[in-house]
Image (tube, rainbow, N blue to C red):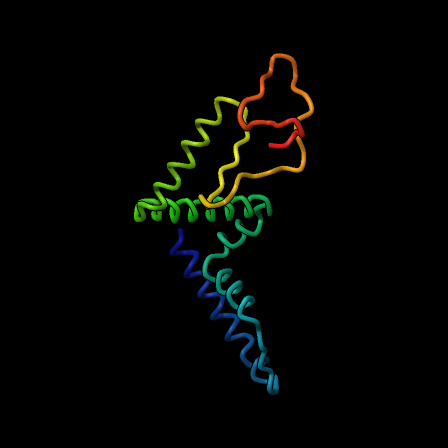
Length: 147
């Protein structure tokens, strides 16, 4: 069936060329300057009209979803290759995952500076009271409420 469609398309194009050759020759200096984007679109249309029509009929959200999935797949493959090739990246990701899984058991917010010389984070606020049954653990709180 595809061979018949190709032959039919070729025959129709040749018939149009024969029919309209005189009109095309009578146009003085008509040289259309089509953009590369337009030419690509026309080339895709003429190469396979059914696929072109089916893709144009798809909703925008479906095309955006497919594009996002392709980008996500490419990023995942690149990240996986980077982890396979670099032991430093692998160690950093493993450390990060251990922190997440360890912290997922309890609700806690922890600040760990990336620079070992960096001092502890001091915040401009302090806890005024704890809910019933909760206890304060961690840094020492002096009488002024500072850490």
